[in-house]
Length: 62
Image 1 (tube, rainbow, N blue to C red):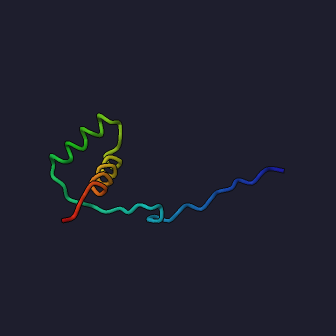
Image 2: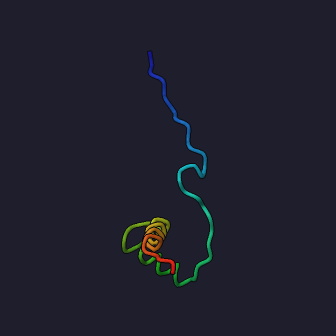
Image 3: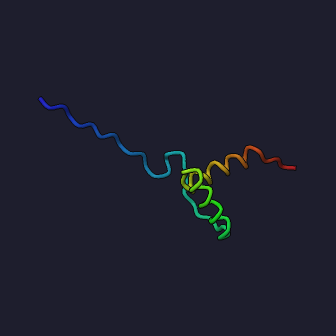
Protein backbone atom coordinates (compact mmCIF):
# COMPACT_ATOMS: atom_id res chain seq x y z
CA UNK A 1 0.00 0.00 0.00
CA UNK A 2 1.35 3.42 -0.98
CA UNK A 3 1.77 6.14 1.61
CA UNK A 4 -0.39 9.20 1.18
CA UNK A 5 1.14 12.50 0.23
CA UNK A 6 0.39 14.97 3.00
CA UNK A 7 0.00 18.59 1.86
CA UNK A 8 -0.32 21.08 4.69
CA UNK A 9 -2.50 24.12 4.23
CA UNK A 10 -0.61 27.27 3.38
CA UNK A 11 -1.12 30.24 5.67
CA UNK A 12 -3.23 32.94 4.12
CA UNK A 13 -1.44 36.08 3.00
CA UNK A 14 -0.82 38.41 5.91
CA UNK A 15 -0.92 35.64 8.51
CA UNK A 16 2.83 35.00 8.48
CA UNK A 17 3.65 37.91 10.76
CA UNK A 18 4.49 40.23 7.88
CA UNK A 19 2.54 42.99 6.18
CA UNK A 20 3.10 44.40 2.72
CA UNK A 21 2.89 48.11 2.03
CA UNK A 22 4.53 50.64 -0.23
CA UNK A 23 6.56 53.70 0.63
CA UNK A 24 8.16 56.54 -1.29
CA UNK A 25 11.90 56.90 -0.85
CA UNK A 26 14.56 58.96 -2.57
CA UNK A 27 16.43 57.55 -5.57
CA UNK A 28 19.71 57.92 -3.67
CA UNK A 29 18.36 55.86 -0.78
CA UNK A 30 17.42 53.08 -3.22
CA UNK A 31 20.91 53.24 -4.71
CA UNK A 32 22.46 53.06 -1.24
CA UNK A 33 20.26 50.08 -0.32
CA UNK A 34 21.13 48.30 -3.55
CA UNK A 35 24.86 48.84 -2.95
CA UNK A 36 24.55 47.54 0.61
CA UNK A 37 22.50 44.57 -0.64
CA UNK A 38 25.22 43.70 -3.14
CA UNK A 39 27.98 44.04 -0.54
CA UNK A 40 26.16 41.87 2.03
CA UNK A 41 24.50 39.34 -0.31
CA UNK A 42 21.14 40.19 1.24
CA UNK A 43 17.93 41.30 -0.41
CA UNK A 44 16.81 44.90 -0.26
CA UNK A 45 13.75 43.75 1.70
CA UNK A 46 15.87 41.91 4.27
CA UNK A 47 18.10 44.95 4.74
CA UNK A 48 15.13 47.28 5.17
CA UNK A 49 13.78 45.01 7.91
CA UNK A 50 17.17 44.90 9.65
CA UNK A 51 17.58 48.67 9.45
CA UNK A 52 14.02 49.38 10.62
CA UNK A 53 14.36 46.98 13.57
CA UNK A 54 17.61 48.66 14.59
CA UNK A 55 16.12 52.15 14.25
CA UNK A 56 13.06 51.25 16.32
CA UNK A 57 15.12 49.56 19.04
CA UNK A 58 17.49 52.52 19.24
CA UNK A 59 14.95 55.35 19.09
CA UNK A 60 13.96 57.58 21.97
CA UNK A 61 10.97 59.89 22.11
CA UNK A 62 11.51 63.14 23.97
